Image (cartoon, rainbow, N blue to C red; front, top):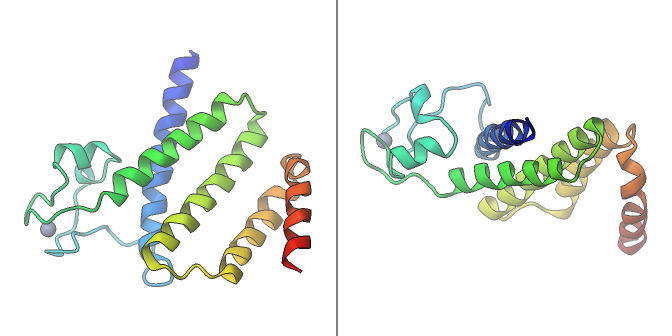
Length: 159
Ligand SMILES: [Zn+2]
């Protein structure tokens, strides 16, 4: 049973990682609702070309139509998120704590990948995202108690 739940958590992480890839790509540029397409030939991708990690492997990292290379970013971010979720799950957190931690880690991964791609995650942008996460997800939770000393120290150092 535990193995099944772990596998489910890992798959959830892969799916969220796939979503984070889309967010990174379209943040402030286009709607996140549009269909994904190949950047080289513009062809709309079919559902079986959008399965996290598996599609990258079966397509051998290339577009099915034009053979253009697909960035390693996609499977890497998916796997990273999958393993992050699995690690958090293995900590044996309470369900609410797991949820908040998973959201928090997803935001961190988003910020890291966005910064890696665009090199323009200025401190105020990161703080803005951090504040959103804090106010909406973490402050009302028990998890905040764990983070409080860390936040206090950060605020002291940046003043
Ligand atoms: Zn293509």
